Every structure is written in structure tokens, then in C-alpha cells.
Length: 480
Ligand code: HEC
Ligand code: HEC
Ligand code: HEC
Ligand code: HEC
Ligand code: HEC
Image 1 (spheres, rainbow, N blue to C red):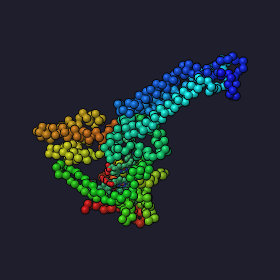
Image 2: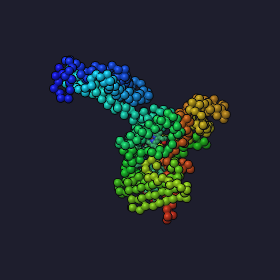
Image 3: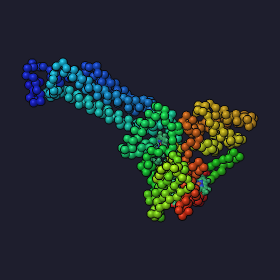
Image 4: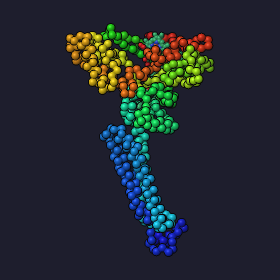
């Protein structure tokens, strides 16, 4: 029947006897028969099977192992694709070998009136569709997996653990890492995946920096990320904040400071942009020139005000000879540099322990001793886990053995609380000690160059001698 083909492309050798196999028939029959082809088929089949098993396990939540998921979503699909590419390649090589032996020099022709050919075509289309569906499913799952906080936080476990732990206790703990670190749009998505690859390479070669440097200079501008959910026009007005602290001389009665922060925003009554969020009004632009990578030493500040005036303030800091410096337009991150990776300070943890009675304030000297053990520079977290509670008991025994005996259980409870606090904030192997990552929100660390007083120090002045004000009342006052 094939020989009687009317198809003009099909140039059948008239000398050939009836029922002679065409090149296509041979190809179909010989497709699997080279070792390479069989390898391709095997690779594809095994990859698909494992991929499906992996996805089912993943979806049922039977195993939570990021490496298993990584295998399912990257290595196996790659295996499947390579297998699929190998099959036609093997067939091609096969055919070329036949050519060398002079068999079937004709073109490959699909003859739709041949049942075999039809079956092949239908099978080919059906299998391709199944493969495409599997690939689409896996890419979709893989896309979600590699964008999940679970992936970001656990795959490079030792590297990301600190940021992941600090993130999990913040208000943003239900927001995916990618919302702030990548944001919407394809461009940053691609950039992020490439920089992700670079980071994986750095981890494998062990060349990454410890601690991971902050600020993150390649961070996507906050306009594109934070402002997906928060917008500066929203009027917050004043917000009362309470600060509670103890001292070594009084562990029982806390000192309470209350301030009303003028967060401001767009005031619907006056239509003016007020308060602290004035810096990020769309009619204002504050930019600054920092001398260091940490952006803690600010030499010059420029401001464009809503009334159209502009100004430049500077202090006596000078850029080193020959350096240009880098101007940066102020955005959310210049104040909210710790919106989610919030690390605590030792005093903060100890005072919270006293307030919540996890550290019994009746034990004499417990605040001082707690601060001492919690700030000890243990070499590893394991070492801290082994010694911290004992160290606290020893310090208390040194003070008064009888008292240490009397409060034994409370001291152990306090030690356990301190250890937990330590483990939530200190990672010696990543170069993270107490205070490695400080916040700009306020002026507690003004001496280290953090916070509002980088600019509001009454030392940056304009040509008229006016300064960026440090007047307490522009930022906060006593709550009514
Ligand atoms: C609410 C927004 C937000 C979310 C969600 C978020 N980050 Fe961040 N992250 C930031 C900002 C802002 C910085 C930059 C801090 C700076 O420049 O000082 C940062 C910095 C980092 C750094 C550099 C080290 C440091 O602490 O400054 C790492 C690493 C990091 N993030 C990883 C993650 C991972 C992993 C997740 C998810 C588990 C995540 N981030 C979720 C906003 C976010
Ligand atoms: C995907 C949405 C989303 C993104 C993106 C986001 N946030 Fe938030 N943020 C929230 C939600 C929701 C809350 C409120 C949580 C609550 O009240 O429990 C919040 C709360 C806050 C708060 C108040 C914290 C407090 O202690 O009350 C600040 C400040 C904040 N976000 C800053 C930022 C900054 C800065 C960024 C960008 C780096 C950012 N957010 C990105 C959703 C987001
Ligand atoms: C000049 C510094 C500064 C800048 C810039 C800034 N903020 Fe704030 N923001 C603050 C301070 C200070 C507070 C009060 C913090 C507190 O409660 O401890 C605050 C509070 C907030 C809150 C909580 C408001 C509430 O209801 O209590 C949100 C949300 C917020 N900022 C988001 C943003 C976003 C988004 C941006 C960028 C568009 C931004 N901020 C830019 C200083 C700033
Ligand atoms: C990069 C420098 C810089 C930093 C950091 C900075 N500010 Fe400012 N701030 C300015 C400048 C410049 C002005 C405007 C001065 C002028 O117009 O004369 C200003 C003005 C203000 C005003 C008055 C706004 C108004 O209504 O006119 C408040 C309030 C304020 N800042 C609060 C803060 C707080 C709170 C922080 C820290 C969380 C902070 N600033 C951090 C540069 C800075
Ligand atoms: C440029 C804005 C700004 C100025 C000026 C300013 N503060 Fe503050 N202050 C803040 C912010 C923002 C916080 C909140 C910090 C936080 O949320 O952790 C704060 C917190 C505080 C606190 C409570 C936290 C702590 O460290 O105990 C005290 C006390 C305080 N300020 C005192 C003052 C005094 C006194 C002055 C005047 C000399 C002053 N501040 C000037 C912005 C300012």
C-alpha cells in the first residue's frame, strides 16, 4: 500500500519490490534499538516516575526535606528533558549509520494511510502532551517551591538560619521572602534567580561573607516592594510607644518611658504631609551621600521640599581624595532597615525576662549575672548550650551559695530562658553576635552611627547655618 502512495514528496524507488519498508518504517522499528536511545528512554522514564513520586510526597507533606524537593523540582526535570532530547538524537545517529550502509537514502515520510504511521503520530502527539503537562505541572510547583520562605530559609541552612529565625518572629513572618527581596515583575525575578545562582556558588565554594553584609546594596527599591502593601500617604498620625527597662540596682520596679511618635503621613484635614513619614511623601525627596558602605557616616544631605525649595546640608566630614561617593535617595529601608530580620539586644531580652517573670526578679544580682552569661562570647552555639545554664549557677554560687541553693530551680529556669534568647540572636559561625545588625529606627545606637541622628544631629548645616533639627518634639512628645 505504501508504494502506491500518491504523495508527490514520496519518491519511491520503482525497482523496489512490494511491501518494502520505507525509511520511516525502519526508523519506527529501530528507534529504541541503540544503546543511546534506550538510555534516553530509561532516563526519561525514571526521571518522570521519581518526579511524580516526589511531587506526591511533597503535596501530602510526608517528608519535609528541602534537598528532596530541590531534586524533584530541578535535577529530575532536567533529567527528563535531557532524556527526551537524547531519543531523537539516538534515532538520528541510527539513521545516519544506516545511510553509511546504503540503506534507505530517501527522505523520511510520514504516510497517513499507513496504520503504523498513524499510530506513531497519535502516540507521539499524545506522549508529547503528557510530557508537556508534566513539565508544566513541575515548573509551576518548582516555581512556587523556589519562591517559598521555606526554600529560601532552609536550603542553605547554616547561611540563612539567622535571617529565617529572626523573620519568623516578626510581623512579616507570613509574608514570603520574595515579596521584599524580589517583588513583582519578570526583570527582578530573573535577576534574583541569577544572583541566587551566584550565591549558591559562593556557598559551595565557601566564599561568602560572614556576617552577610548589611545594608544589602542590591536590594530592590522599597517603592516596588514595601509599597505593594504599605503606602506613605496613609495617615497614621501619632502612635504611643512604651519602653520598659530595669537596672541592676532595681530589678523589681521597671522604668517606663512612654512617647507619642509623630509618624504622620498625609493628613486628610490639612492635606499636608506631616511627621516622620514626610521623608517619603511623593512631593519630597531626601537624598544623602554616605562615606561608608554601612551608610552610617553621612556627609551631605539634599532635600527637595513640597514648596519647590531645595537645600543641601553638610557637616565637616569630607570624602577621601579621589572618591566620588554614592548618592542615595532615602526610602523606607533607610529607617526600617530591620522590618523583619529583627535581632534583639541582650538588655532587651534580660529585661523582658524580668518583666515576664521568666527570670525571677527576687534573686539578688540576677540581672547583672544574666547579662554576663548571655553576652559571653561562646565559640559555638553548642558550647553555649552546654555551658550557659551552668555558668549562671556558678556566678550565683559565687555571690551566695545559700541563695543559689534556695533559688536553684528559678536559676535553671532563668538560664534556660537566656539560652533560648541567645539561640535566637547569636550565630558565631555566621559572624553574628549581639548587635551585629542594628536598627535605624530611633537613636538608641546613635553613637555607632545608626538611627535618625545620623542626619538629625544639629551638625549638618546649610549655607544659612540652619541645621537638620534634633529638637525632640519634631519626632515625639509626651502622650496626652
Ligand atoms: C518585609 C520584608 C522582608 C521579608 C519578608 C524578608 N526580608 Fe530579608 N531583608 C529585608 C530588608 C529590608 C533587608 C535589608 C536590610 C538592610 O539593608 O539593612 C533584608 C536583608 C536580608 C539579608 C541580609 C542580611 C541582613 O539581615 O541584613 C538576608 C540574607 C535576607 N534578608 C534573607 C531573607 C530570607 C531568607 C527571607 C525569608 C525567610 C527574607 N529575607 C524575608 C526585608 C525582608
Ligand atoms: C505582602 C505585603 C507586605 C509587604 C511587601 C511589606 N509589608 Fe510591612 N506589613 C504587612 C502587614 C500585613 C503588616 C501588619 C502586621 C500586623 O499588624 O500584624 C505589616 C506591618 C509593618 C510594619 C509595622 C510593624 C509593627 O511593629 O507594627 C512596618 C514598620 C512595616 N510593615 C514595614 C514594611 C517595610 C519597610 C516593608 C518593605 C521592606 C514592608 N513592610 C513590606 C505587609 C507587608
Ligand atoms: C524617616 C524614617 C522613616 C521612613 C523613611 C519611613 N518610615 Fe515608616 N516609620 C518610621 C517610624 C519611626 C515609625 C514608628 C516606629 C515604631 O512604631 O517603632 C514608622 C512606622 C511605620 C509603620 C507602622 C505604622 C503604624 O500603623 O503603626 C509602617 C507600616 C511604616 N512605617 C511603613 C513605612 C513605609 C512603607 C515606608 C516607605 C514608603 C516608610 N515607613 C518610611 C520611620 C520611617
Ligand atoms: C538621611 C538623612 C535623614 C535621616 C536618616 C532622617 N532624617 Fe528626618 N529629615 C531629614 C531632612 C533633610 C529633613 C528636612 C529638614 C528641612 O526641611 O529643613 C528632615 C525632617 C524631618 C522631620 C520634620 C518633617 C516636617 O514635617 O517638616 C521629622 C519629624 C523627621 N525628619 C524625623 C526623622 C526620624 C524619626 C528619623 C529616623 C527614624 C529621621 N528623620 C531620619 C533628613 C533625615
Ligand atoms: C529625628 C527624630 C527624633 C528626635 C529629634 C528625637 N527622637 Fe527620641 N526617638 C525617635 C524615635 C523614632 C524613637 C523610637 C525608637 C523605637 O521605636 O525603638 C525614639 C525613642 C526615644 C526614646 C525611647 C527609647 C529609648 O532609647 O529609651 C527616648 C527616651 C527618646 N527618644 C528621647 C529623646 C530625646 C530626649 C530627644 C531630644 C534630645 C529625642 N528623643 C529626639 C526619634 C527622635
